[in-house]
Length: 287
Image (cartoon, rainbow, N blue to C red; front, side):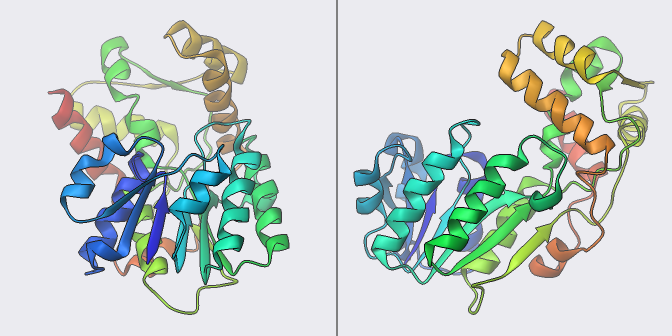
């Protein structure tokens, strides 16, 4: 039995569907979620649904009961992640799982991104736990930048603070498929995967591709980290999220989102989704 935590989120839900596509019987899958009502669609497919809250260990013990393998999708609550992940790791140890997979950050051990700290702490907890584990160090999702296309079209510019740093992103579905491959495979314990897109681009190149597809000029405007944070706050983002995004862009400028290993495409057995395809999909959605 395979348990996917955070299965109502964007990545976890895609992992469930990727496992189903790999012919894993739905009865052998558990969607562990904080609010079971949010995954009624998965339940309708025959997937088991169990309530699980990273902050409530008792729910985690119940969710992981009988589990063979578990995917710990990293918490979205930055600043609280390490303690929450520790609860899941402890529950996995008590459940005696044969494999615990964790979604970390690309090159977490040397990443300049502030996001890396909690991932590094979690990886240390995994190593000390004694639970057989595999680390999926996910690079940037293309959707992280594609989500900014609507305001870029509205204002006639794509802003950021990544300078000319190269970003090897891939579609979220690519990372989900990789997680499904690992969960459905044997002899994964002890491995660390550095997962990123086959192609890399600067935000100048991102804006050029966006301009070509949109049929009008949408230049990239590079801001300082502080100015980008202020612009994001001015657009209505909470200060903590604005700071996180600005810091991540600044980290990208220092090579934090770049990788050439192609481990992701090797895992999934196909090229990663091109940036141009992700931009095309986004433009179709806003048309």
